Amino acid sequence: MKAYRASILWFASHSEGPARALFEADGMLVVGPNAAGTQVVQAVGAWRDVVGQYPGVAVEHLTGRIIAPGFVDLHVHYPQTNVIGSPADGLLPWLENYTFPEEKRFVDPEYSAQAAMFFIAELLRNGVTTALAFATSHPESVNALFAQAQAQSLRLITGLCLMDRNAPPELLNQSSASGRVDATEQSLLGSEALIRRWHGQDRLGYAITPRFAPSCTDAQLRGAGELAAKYPDVWIQSHVAENKDEVAWARELFPQSRSYLATYGDFGLMRKRAIYAHCIHFDDDDRALMRDTGAAAAISPTSNLFLGSGFFDYAGADRVGFQYGLASDVGAGTSFSPFHTMLGAYYVGREGQTKQGLSLSPQQLWWQHTAGAARALGLDGASGAPSVGNLLPGCEADFVVLNPQVTPLLARKTAIAANLDELLFAMIVLGDDRLIERTVISQGI
Ligand code: GUN
Ligand code: ZN
Image 1: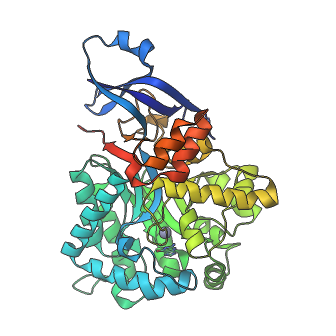
Image 2: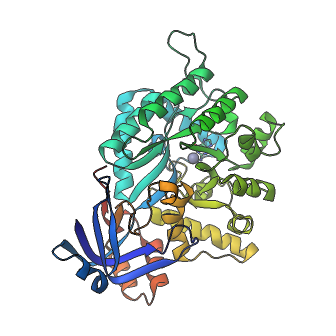
Image 3: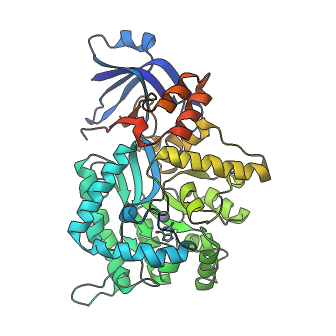
């Protein structure tokens, strides 16, 4: 058992979204093992209320620091660390000219291992303690990321990227060495083998990962849907409705579906634990399909602004009522920092405001990158699932220690914050990896 004395930020519940943030200027967080041996939050609240319940507990005093839930990145590509900041005339040329060439290198297990190590270090430096990540279409890349995440006890979900058409040959899923199994079938057999090897090991989870409908044949999407039915507690991740050229292409390739999003539904790929990146060019039928199936959107504002993809329609999502959370989408996204992503989301909300009267509060932004994103992943403690992205008792003890004095401007600005909104806004607007003094990961599963 260990306790921390600091200012503490957390949320009243996972399910009461959007945000109801709680803040104790002089708070106490108590962490200790649960019955299964996992380090979880035992108590959180005002110092004066909690301290008497834990006589003799070792306390670390973090004067002037803020403890907050570890961030949850709902969509990020580990093989695209080197691709950050590659300008292109929209999504499809960006994939062709920068992303696919870099992803080819992940056929090499050593290249994958060093990239995975760097990527995980970068997540932790930025306070990200749970990530749903893309790998490449090479099983080596998936094994490398899982192995590194396991070594660091990071809660990480990834899977083999499914691509059996419309990409360079080196990135298409490979057929079996004997040539008796074709690439499509081998990609599905390979996914299943990886599910059996990694899903549910320590803090790791598997995601069935069709890259996006244009990179997959009907047979591959059908097989992915069958796998999803066979393994209902694995995740699904893909991209949808990011860019107008991409939408038009997907409509040409799958004319029998009502919309691009509906293509995934038609192949059994929409359900709880299915996370679709972007979800920009939607109509209300698409939004209703998200709501009715329990799928969730990963909103990636820095990526959408960088590639000129468009603006996520927050008002539309809330009007119809589907779940969403924030994501870096590195390498189209420009930063691993959740502060940059939250600021990008704020700009996107302001763009929406001119049309729909929307402005996101700092608590909403923070919730979307912590408890809200955890809820979108089904990691909110419901039905016996683990709970992350919050600091309520029972949540896994993943948290960040923020130092609001770390730069002269942050110190100056946070010192005059008159309320929680002003404090959180100062950190969202001025914060980056320097603000994260320490990232603490739950141990001992
Ligand atoms: N759509 C298909 N693949 C990708 C990718 O790697 N990044 C983004 N932003 N969109 C995609
Ligand atoms: Zn992406």
